[in-house]
Length: 261
Image 1: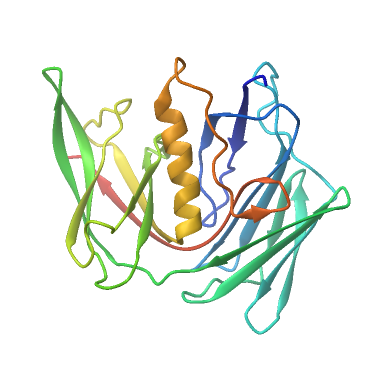
Image 2 (image 1 turned 180 degrees about the horizontal axis):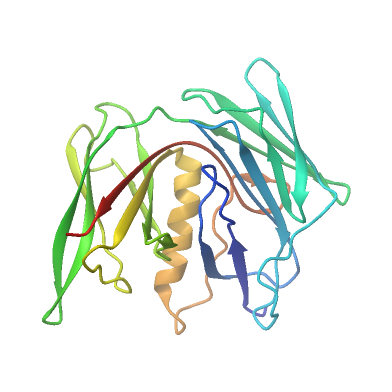
């Protein structure tokens, strides 16, 4: 089958979604639906994005799908409906995520049903951000390091997002506590394409995600690291049933900024 490329456009959505375009290779020849849903704490505005895959030779970046029915079921059987804000973007302003709670996504589009379940983990506090120096081929680059203390005896999974002057890094930062349970962790957010300069404003988002969402982002990262000469990549592991690509994530978010001295 012919390799195709899928561009996920994750639109800047105030406090509830990331601000990046992720471009990854996929093993897929027929158009498929892509569902990207996030339920976060700290805000009552949540968004779900629905699009169709596009071929690598197509100019379109985001092929938003209109007319879908989108709802989230919370514990206690509360049903929250999402309204279409623009093609492919579905929004509610009446749901605030709570750690420890289970959320179920239901999507009906083109008479097809898709669903996913995600449990919002309890947050692990972000302690500090600090500037570090990384030497590569005799060149020194500045990067940001996040420090936090992992919770002992709890399986924790993390995703970090890095923004410099409001521009997102394209690198995917994910980790687990498989080898660091209960320890103080220093996570270096080094991006070879970014060289921090004086007065740059750096923002870091630290997300506590569940295991299935971690597997999804890890799959994207591994696909992106294979390079053009690699073997045919596998589709990222989705937690959405019914044959759609993408993910549904209930996660906590902590945000912190610093200015490069």
